Amino acid sequence: MLRRLWHILSSTIAAFIGVQTERNRTRDFQTSSPIPFIIMGIILAIMFVAALLLIVEQVLR
Image 1 (tube, rainbow, N blue to C red):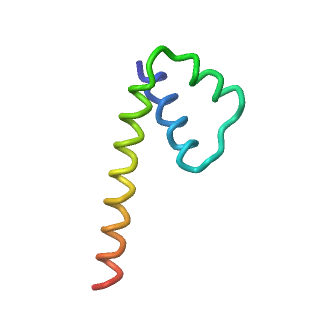
Image 2 (spheres, rainbow, N blue to C red; image 1 turned 45 degrees about the vertical axis):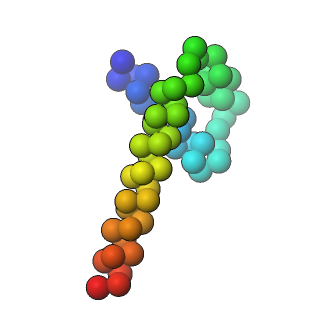
């Protein structure tokens, strides 16, 4: 379970950055459902926006 979570996290981060190995991309598309990747993407996007807001708030103080 932890290994699968790590795989989903690393694949989603690679998608955010725009780099992915062919082997990992093929493995991602062989999964039965895209839902875990979508959920992880939403979580990471929210965390990214929150981090940016915190950084901007600290800089403007």
